Image 1 (tube, helix red, strand yellow):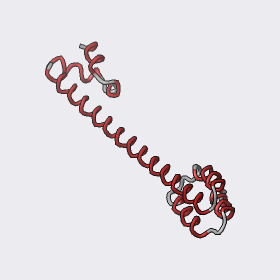
Image 2 (tube, rainbow, N blue to C red):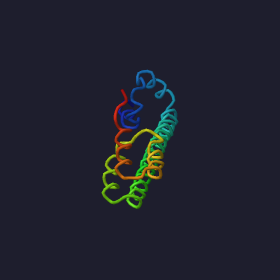
Image 3 (cartoon, rainbow, N blue to C red):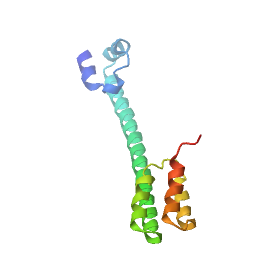
Image 4 (tube, one colour):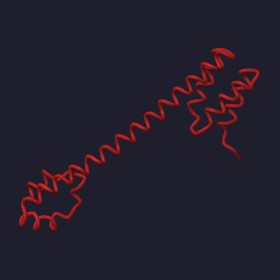
Length: 128
């Protein structure tokens, strides 16, 4: 019975105390099937939660990548390709929500690519 439990019980649930479960299972063999169903459902639930979390993280990163690409295209159109290329390297370091939106405002407000890049670099400097 212990061998069967070790094989059937998912690794994540082996922390359950087998010495407490085993006597109950020997008295009621159908309990093992019921517990196996519970373990399966719990593992499935955890898998779904992990999948959702990973999907959200990937979606957020994809959205940020698209936003960075858009800002670089706008900078290239308003200023030049060199400004857009340098801006691209800076944008990868922007991690605080709202910072990319602020860069979009700067593209409109700045008269030169140098001014845009200077603002971006200032934003990345640690505040003292």
